Amino acid sequence: MATTGNPDPEAAIADKEPRGPRSLLARARDNLAFRSVWPELNGAMGDLGTYIPIVLSLALARHLDLGTTLIFTGVYNAVTGLIYGVPMPVQPMKAIAATALSDPSFGIPEIMAAGILTAAFVLFLGATRLMQLVYWFVPLPVVRGIQLAQGLNFAMAAVKYIRYEQDLGKGKSSGRRPWTGLDGLILSIAAICFILLVNGAGSESTRRRRRSSTVQDQGDGQVGDRDTQEDEERQEETEGRWRSMIRRAAPAIPSAVIVFVVGVAFAVARHPVAVRELRAGPSRMRVVRIPREAWKQGFLKGAVPQIPLSVLNSVVAVCKLTLDLFPEKEASATSVSVTMGAMNLVGCWFGAMPCCHGAGGLAGQYKFGGRSGGCVAALGALKLALGLALGGSMLRVLVEFPVGLLGVLLLFAGVELAVAARDMSSKAEAFVMLLCTAVSLVGSSAALGFLCGMVAHGLLMLRAWAMGVRLN
Image (cartoon, rainbow, N blue to C red; front, side, top):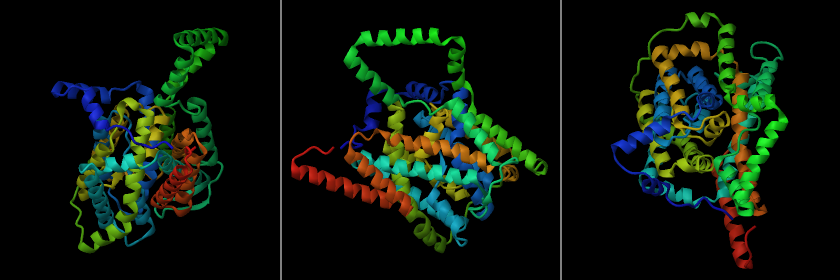
């Protein structure tokens, strides 16, 4: 059975690239360079289906400072894009957010305490390189099970956003969404159809394309490549110019950007007075005072359920998905842990929402065209500009944003993440993956699914060794 074990990516990067100020500057420019302008900007919108509903819910229900959160998450986006050179996402910590929305006694001090404690633990694992050992130790089918569960969770939440009206302040669904209106079902269905027509099912990852081309080269050699190129040219002549033009133009249409801009326009149309309520200038930042009891409650109710999710989905699954999508830009478990820990140890003291990296955000941004660090850096610049220019008054407009459109973006992000699990090549691998997924979904706990998957993987390995057969 395949595992995630591979050589240390940090050592590999050090061997490949020369050191020195000039090389670091060149690497930074390469990491932030757009591969293609509109697809990169389009990819930047792919993570908003997760980010906006959670941040808005906490701003309405727990008075989270939206302006401060926009400023800090904007900086996080820019820094991670600069460091990794891939659309590394910055998402709210979901277990902490879920606790805050379900428990009225879990306020801002408890939220920030939970974020600081989670960040400190993850940073410790990264600084001591223990996280790299965790990454090597977790088998690939277990990682795929976590990804599949998270993807399906996103997709099911997205369908709920589309089908039912949402009370974000309470984190609950209300009545069925009407068919018509500025946030009706027809709008959401039209957005889904539009994205499918423009983006289709998405492109194959770089690693999968290389694997396919390698297999073809082994069978046919260079003659196969020439034949393929000639076939493509012959097909283009047969299809005609208009189909060729459509094939070239479709990737350049920024579908997610268009959906987001339409959402902003509809938000203004739903509540025009909100524009006049905007106030220039950033929110006033204050250091959050965290009493002893808040540290205790933050640890027990927030950090304890968040730590397994952060380790498994925000580090291990993110590193594996990065390897799948961008083999030449591999991010190590050590570096991802350090960046995630460091950014929260700064921002949470000032009241910014605790954040992490997430496999779902990476899949969503890749789905809509994000291929470089410039993608998330552009999103970070937008957040930073809004946070500095308008601060917390942005809440008056964003609260009117059509939730159904956010559900559409989240739906495609969830499906893209779940599709990554299709590479299980044996029945045993698929069994472990599906067991991990089922337990994670039913038990609402990635940690429980992880434990069941690891036990099942170990028992299958033991059985195969006792019988002297290969595990397949």
